Image (tube, rainbow, N blue to C red; front, side, top):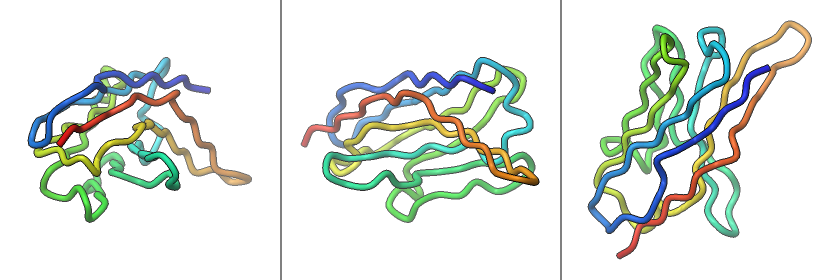
Length: 119
């Protein structure tokens, strides 16, 4: 098992930047991909970005060119750099660790961090 804790959320004006961090209690090396999801009030949780070892990161169309995901396996941490933030980016952001399994896949989630973008 692994526990995930997000940090770095907060209130920012439109056009501003935030950097989210996701610290894991254990090694993240075997988790592929690691990802960031978000859920806005009244909406379903959606994938923002994901990254697997040795692969090109994947981004939702709505954040391409503005957000950058990275992972540091040595520090067991995943980051989400968010630039040019928009009010529609307001949501609770969750870190996810995914591992494919023979019998079943495993998913771990953090408690989330609130990001609020004011216009």
